[in-house]
Length: 184
Image (cartoon, rainbow, N blue to C red; front, top):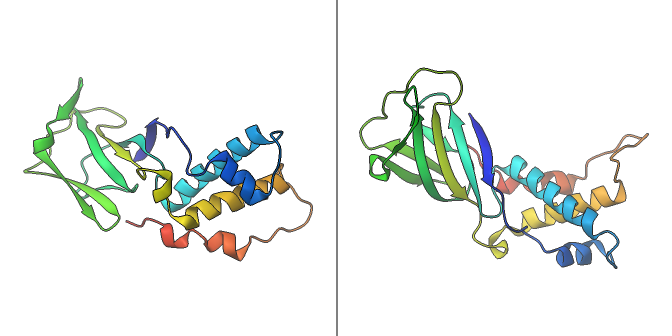
């Protein structure tokens, strides 16, 4: 099972001005670096929490039909398609042949009757393409925004991430997003 971003987010959960104000950075000399740090911190937060923060299109690839097909990314806005490999081409299943339902923070995709038979082959044979993420930056949880700012600040203070002394993770930073993690 793997997830591939098909269409990345068009914006970030924080503006560059918000990042700069929080980190007390003036001027424009670091704008490119701070933008890259924010994107990287968002990607880390998404990986750590299982949440996709801004609207994006993602494809879930599987090698088979599972007994319980769970989209382990949240929040799901919609499912664009469910496809399967019939042995020679990808077939798209009609939206009336499956149901999409929310189970807590996760979404499940179930067949109305049964999934079609898969063709032989190596690699992915089931694809679910979906749109996920919060509708706007204002909807992104404050703890995740704070995590992004703190992570960008840590990188700004130590851009190489190298040290000759033992570094201890901040208890606040390491636990800031615990309440936002998506579990299946």
